Image 1 (cartoon, one colour):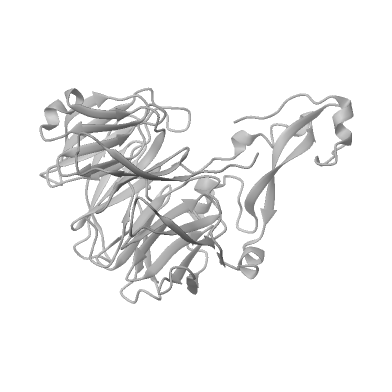
Image 2 (spheres, rainbow, N blue to C red):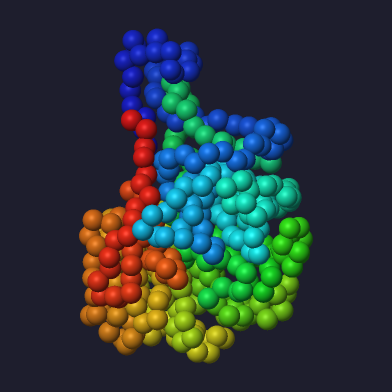
Length: 406
């Protein structure tokens, strides 16, 4: 949100603002820079549980729930009883946006680095390895002013001159968007940019697919990067394939040979943000319009993928503000942003738009995981869990609230 307005001359004396001499002064969000070396040097990752100020990606592994706090780290919860999740620890990881887990090892990005933690004691994860400088484009996706030497770690309100106001406009920064797995790994949402399949970690950035061999889960080995094209946003695994969503379409890869993905096809749609989930026959893609995503239509597209080399649009349905989605048997759950969480009967894909089962209008939702014990939804107010044994009537079990400072 742009926050630049004319400040009366008397405000220059405020001690909370940096002072820059000029006849005309404006209040702007000015980036705070650090080097990666200084960030690495002060790493002190584990602390006691703390309140969640902002929700990001969600991930489940065994009886644990992981909640990313964008650019800050990961909150870890014991989720044995989804009606009473218990906070265990906060794992401070500067610059963290995505995560995945395999065989008791947590993988997380930290600006340019890939970190690996041992989860033998989830209340006190131990840092095992740090793969340095492997995510240069991930860095640029979320922090447009970053360079190889300087990382934006936050913002502060400062007075700047009229001539500098465009340089420090908050529009110069981009906030992160709110991206059946293999045995031993966990489950992420449809907005994930990390996923694990066939003992390999796959991570996407705006243009690349990054591959890491994690057969030795404690020591990820970089394999290679594959250039996919611009606008890449999300990644979803299904059997021996990866479905990669972009703001212009979907790319399908065969990962039968895990270290050597083979592109099978590309499906093109109107410009829009694009998470995807799939089953044996269809890919379900939400398209969201807006300033960041581009485009002017909010849709659910159902794509026939029975021939993975020739994906074909079968049906499309109008939505209002769609983000993430999840599929459980023949029920499709769609996070329709500020218009709530919606459940659809997807047994007949041609009639999804006419088979709305339920709407939770007060649940501003951004992503969802259909887990083995509960339906987990991340939203503006926190992380919600529902009993979804009755597909047409969700029953709220718990909420882990967002608590913002006054």
